[in-house]
Amino acid sequence: MAHPDLRSYLSALDAHGQLLRWQDRVDPEPDLGAAARAVSNLTDRGPALLFDSITGYERGRVALNAVGSWPNHALMLGLPPETPVKDQFFEFARRWDDFPVAVERRTDPPWAELSLDEGIDLFQLLPLFRLNSWDVGCYIDKALVITRDPDDPDHFGKQNVGIYRMQVKDVDTLGIQPLPTHDAGLHLRRAEQRGQHLPVAIAIGNEPVITTVGGMPLNHDESEYEMAGAIQGEPYRIAAAPLTGLDVPWGAEVVLEGEMLAGVREVEGPFGEFTGHYSGGRRQPVIRIRKVSYRPDPIFEHLYLGMPWTEMDYTLALNTSVPLHRQLKAEFPEVVAVNAMYTQGLLAIVSVKQRYGGFGKAVGMRAMTTPHGLGYCKVVIVVDETVDPFNLAQVMWALSVKFHPRHDTVTVPNASVLPLDPSSDPPGITDKVVLDATTPIAPDTRGHYSQTVEAPERTAEWEQALKEMLR
Picture 1 (tube, rainbow, N blue to C red):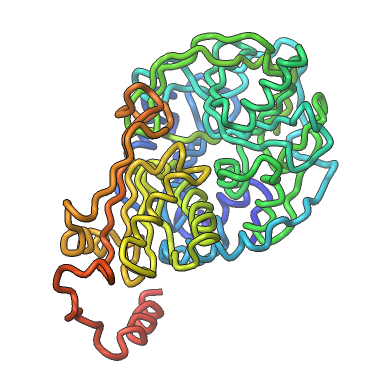
Picture 2: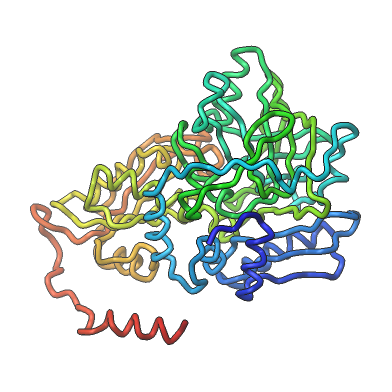
């Protein structure tokens, strides 16, 4: 089931008709960004895109939309491409229970074949391009950024593997946006307190499980590599980066090494973000690249961001939903499922079996105070356990007939949210709301909900039979 590298995953997509290979020469701009936007516009079952020939670059191919559909997401998990989203959610949650899975260390990474220590020019090495018209420059936005906790460098779990946007500012210089609450931001602060630069490795072109896990809200001492092993069902392969000694994916296409510079901040942005709006320019940390290792014919994977839905929404859909589900269910066993797929969970839908009147509202407010919910979960919709939170038709039905604006709205003023939310005012502060669309139960007795239309007998059997026929 596991894919050792990006190439293996792309081959699996190709075998299922989910890879479109473009062999004619294309211009970096606007063709690559436009193609990624177009495939997201056309269908929610779209293929990955692989471009073999980029104007201005002798080497390097570009992969886009690798996990940009539910069939591709299922294939990432080793499931049949027609697997419904709800089934993928519960399978993802089941595999989480296997965490941690010990890693497999190897010494023969394919990215070590070629290297460069002097005369580094990222604009020549990588096929770089702007994703959207008003981006301030070229970005690397789907790479893994690996750092260690300077206060506990030997703790494997505290080695962070995260996804951060990085602006290519010069031939060997990147701007990076780690929030102070992110592990990389925490590591940088501790390094700066010591008066030290923070060593960093950047892995470009990775198989999709570690990329997905890199965007998960794990605890500070939980290893992304050990979680990737649980999700893919076998130990994750890693190798030591030669300059920094940081652990990087064995199957990466390109590895950059250097350090975040202590005390240095430069303006980074604007950049077209997952909110569908451009973020402004802010003073952010800077990375200086000292070494590059790469395969002879690397595949440069990029993530298109913009108006949802794009690949980012598929990539972060379940790795956001499952942590929220686990955190809520630990305190409220009545929670059935959580759909936090919308704009990284700025809107979340929770299905719950009510214990007593007002219970749904309590669950909705708790969602706002989970580790992820503090920065997201601006709107929480709570529905009954009989409503599939991944079926928007059912959710809209519940809002239409179960939700009473006067009784079922809970507003929390001046709550925290990520500063990228364009509606926050000031940035990072917003009001939040719970919309309780559950069926009122005692002592909250109101409405007329006693005569529910039940599904005909043997409906479940017919669902299974038709599913097999469609497959």
